[in-house]
Amino acid sequence: MGSKLVGCGSAIPSLSISNDDLSKIVETSDDWITARTGIRHRRVLSGDETLRGLSVQAAQKALEMAQVTADDVDLVLLCTSTPDDLFGGAAQVLTEVGCTNAFGFDITAACSGFIIGLTTATRFIKGGGVRNVLVIGADALSKFVDWSDRGTCILFGDAAGAVLVQACSADEDGLLGFCLQSDGNGQKHLNARTLNDESILSKTNGVPGFPPRKATYSCIEMNGKEVFRFAVRCVPQSIEKALEEARLPASNIDWLLLHQANQRIIDAAASRLGIPSEKVISNLANYGNTSAASIPLALDEAVRSGKVKKGDIIAASGFGAGLTWGSAIIKW
Ligand code: ACO
Image (cartoon, rainbow, N blue to C red; front, side, top):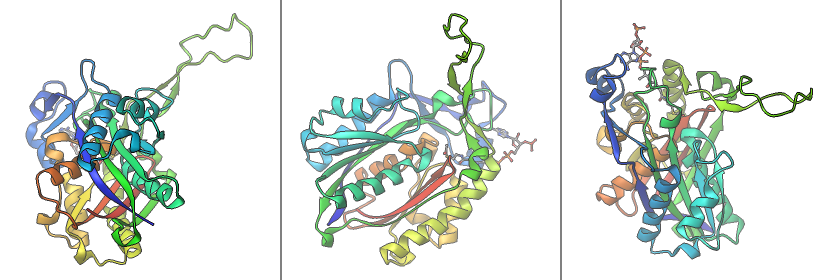
């Protein structure tokens, strides 16, 4: 039994924030941000836009391309670290899309979430009883950005992207190799930690033994240099391991599609893998780092623009908080 991608879709918020806009709130400049990151604009949720809404739109577009109806979907994986509800968002998304026969759950792994979602989809399909899996990568890190920290607020944007993974014969297999890795030692370099705000008293009527506590989260805290080094070191190794599983040499890669965090990370990884720049997919200039959404968003744009064609081999890799990282070799 194999599995392949048969549709993709994406959605972005309406509000666009430019580097010049950011230079009005922190000491920075378009030149600095463009040179150090490659980012020029990012989209941010505003008004009544929600992560759920973006996820629903992206999923509907993927179903439309796949020509699969919502009630034929068996499983919905919402890869996100920023659901509208702490308990997860997959159930609400699948209900709104109309996936009446599906069950769903969230996968929390920051910018690696989508690759882990793809891997999970193939495992469910191989296990049997599941034929169509919607994998949605969606994040709204803008909710956790400290807009006074110029080291992080310039990087992130909000978006959703989705693919439909479908069961197929082993000959048609389109998900050829994976590599997933994690290392909690690096959590100190990138996190949005739980805080126990003891200043907010819960109503315990003064009875001892009940700690007054309300959990909140810190804004994103990051040591950019360490995350940069980690990505440049680990991503090429991870892609090489996924290629090994796929039994393909790097020369077979038609497209390198990395998590869109920083153009310098993408360029360094491509150069270590010996992949020329014309084979590298990049759209972070327009959207910044959209975490779990960045790979399916870039894939959707590349497919709809005709860049990625049927049968092309894509080496995709996500990396980020946890630390987590992972790669997938995909035949479109
Ligand atoms: N504008 C102007 N100056 C700035 C800005 C800014 N926005 N941000 C930092 N600086 C200054 C610093 O204060 C520092 O000044 P100093 O030399 O006087 O101390 C100088 O620029 C250099 O700062 P560095 O942090 O060393 O700059 P660096 O070249 O490392 O670039 C960046 C910073 C862009 C954050 C880079 O390290 C990076 O992209 N790292 C990877 C981050 C990443 O990808 N994170 C997301 C992972 S995905 C996830 O899971 C959420």
